[in-house]
Image 1 (cartoon, helix red, strand yellow):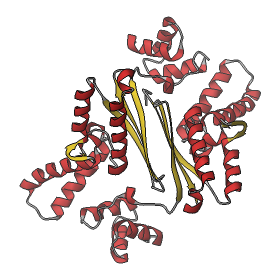
Image 2 (image 1 turned 180 degrees about the vertical axis):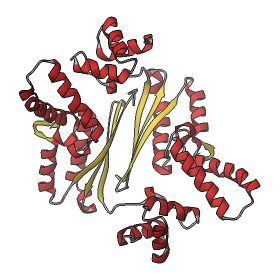
Image 3 (image 1 turned 90 degrees about the vertical axis):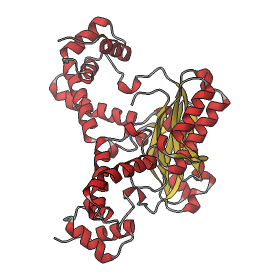
Image 4 (image 1 turned 30 degrees about the vertical axis):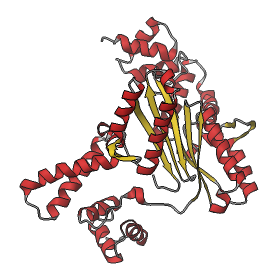
Length: 198
Length: 198
């Protein structure tokens, strides 16, 4: 049973124990990281849990609340705190939060759509086209177009940017990256609407 | 196969179709609400999805962002918009958002802890006590105390209120209810911390 050095390092960072203890815990857990962490908690070696883990990312948490009825939080990462503190960056984060409030995306990027949701949507589109009586050979083609349209509806980066609908939010992001001179990532967001059913 | 009148009403509200169509869709879906809704989408009868459903609840979405590094949204419901617009209510919502930023609860109430999380925590506590060599007859008793302590750590309503640790947030909520004269519910919150691992 070999245990990766990265996992050992990660466990050490989380728990503050030595190399030997971390390796031992991982070996005993047969490489299962969560099990190893739990075992260390049981032994009183670690009080921390995964939540305590932090990535070395800079940036800002931005917010926008519309009339007390729609609230948005968004995490935008930059490479340095220096850039995160500039007015341009703050403006960018605020723009994105406002866009999310208005356009209600469900995901940041296409890659974030879970398989179940995507399969269901594809299935619905195909069924809808079949019911319409379209011939099979063009159903595939139309489906593709409909899926692309779906992306522009539910993915933040694919949506037309509310303040300039000629570009997508993804294109606006690229502009910001060029302007600010370092990589910027819209990492995640949260949007609450008063009274909505979850 | 009988279909409840509530489900028919709900489907009608979501889709805007008539009573007969809603009932037919539900019957065909053998009472499965989601299936009925999907079937109506396929038939082009409904563009809406469950997200569009709204409860008739008033209140406010409140926010608090600390140094651009910790952001909180919280939904607090009142019975009337009149109360939601009072300064007292706004202050209450702001206090709760600030408390969440500082105290990082994971759930609103004890009832919101999912079974898996709770079972895992109980299991860890028992294992920890067994390892410590305590006799079985007192392990149960100590466990109970430890679970109660866990609640005060992870449940918003059980946490000591940050601005007055002599009372819990739940007690502070009861005070607000008495003061404002109508029912108030802290419904849900979202908390993002810069760079945290999800």
